[in-house]
Amino acid sequence: MNIKNNLNSGAVALTMPAARPVFGRAFDITILAFIVLVGVQTYYCFGDISYYLENGLFETCQNIFLFLGAVLYFQAARTAPDTVSRSFWLALTIFCMCILFRELDVRGTRLEPLLGPVFNHHIHYISLGVLWIALLIGSWGHVIQTLLLTPRWLVKGSGRVLLVGCALYVLGDIAEKHFLTGDPDFSEMMEESFEQLGTLFIFLSAYVPLRKAKA
Image (cartoon, rainbow, N blue to C red; front, top):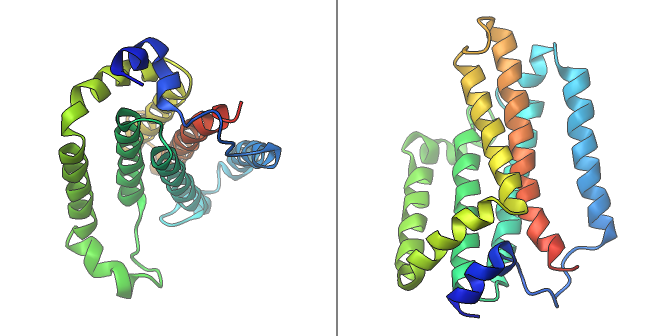
């Protein structure tokens, strides 16, 4: 598959081979359950600040969605039909890991004795930097092709889902800085709610291309 075909086919060029099934109906039901769960959780929990505290229910769900998103993007990269697509999916894998590491907080948990020094010395961010550099070096021969594919993918299919997820996540950051309301508790609840919706959409953006590959 050459780059001209990649550009003409848009998002299709960034999916796994259609001949290889990935997820069945059972997984679709799981995805629907995630969506319903987030809706119900937001409706019933909003107003009780205890659900929105550090490492609380909402942050835990965000971490789960980001982890699953990284796993699915890596699966897409692992079985990608060409090197350009593989580099693209790997970049999105690292992108999910960046947000996940930003959300993770081991302070006050059982993991603090083990992972506390890693987070205190920003070793996790250094590791991500190394991964970005390694990806850039490994994909150096087709960086331009990958960049050319990106805008087309972002306005088609799962790219649009990712954009919605990022917009909601940024809206959560805006709420955290009290731009939407001056009430600290209300700002916290809005922040975590928007971020949970954002990470859900990011996860869905990783699922959609894999599901399409089965069609």
